Length: 74
Figure 1 (tube, helix red, strand yellow):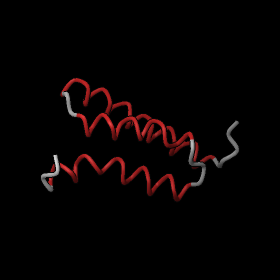
Figure 2: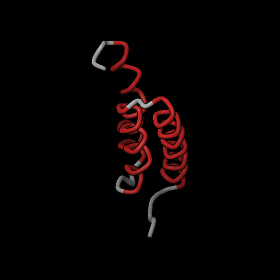
Figure 3: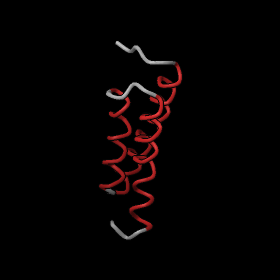
Figure 4: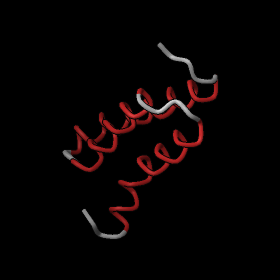
């Protein structure tokens, strides 16, 4: 059962929707880092209930594929 705030619920929905988009595009483009980031974005709001950790982890997971491609990691 969810006992967090309204803000954490809204952030969870936003990051999960972004993760769904990452998974859909990553599957179509056969991009493994994008798929992994998408699954992380979908699943981590289930385990994190506070707003600041949601923002930090979600922001890092959302920007990781972009940063990795810009720096030549994948």
